[in-house]
Length: 286
Image 1 (tube, rainbow, N blue to C red):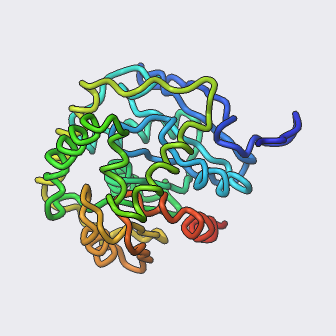
Image 2: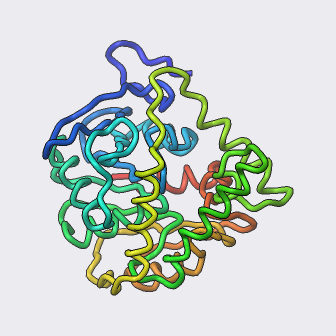
């Protein structure tokens, strides 16, 4: 439970205040927590994700000493506007949001689709990003990224038939290790009980999927130009964005650090949050 006094920062994501900022005709919904000042850590969320889809066991440890910001892209959750049909345009929207808050330098924490957006952002605005965290993601034009669409629809159907959250199938292995980790993760996402975000619309979700498919079929970006310290992480059995794509990113980004968690899938960082959270806190240290 957050015990922050009036002049102390909120460090619990479940209690993070919701705000909006308007830029480019879009009202961006966002939350912030942690001590302000210094370089903020901006979180880029996954496919169909909103402000309510971040694991507090990862955000809260970072927010103990860092200013953390999560946000909804246009057309997602409580943000107004339309979801664009390309990852490049999503990166442009993210840049608009970041500049609207007045930041010239940020650290990026990204997961899945968010990692694709983050890559396009840093390629276009290399001076904006100091440190980069890419989890559960892959490079533009990466092998089989365009197959995310089929995998997603199949697992959404499987989840519907069992009245489960699709993330239980998409993010975790369906074995004795993955199933309880999935249930625990879904429970953690419910810890915020007030002022929750709006769920993504079906149309917005479908548009995001089309953008991912286009990204997967595009010519690769030149990631050799990236000079930021970069941490790449995934599970060893990612069905959504195949684990080999994390290794591909590691080879493309000079000096990057790669962490692969055994017996875990797309949500490996959430399954192993007790190991990953301290590692990412250390990596993001000023």
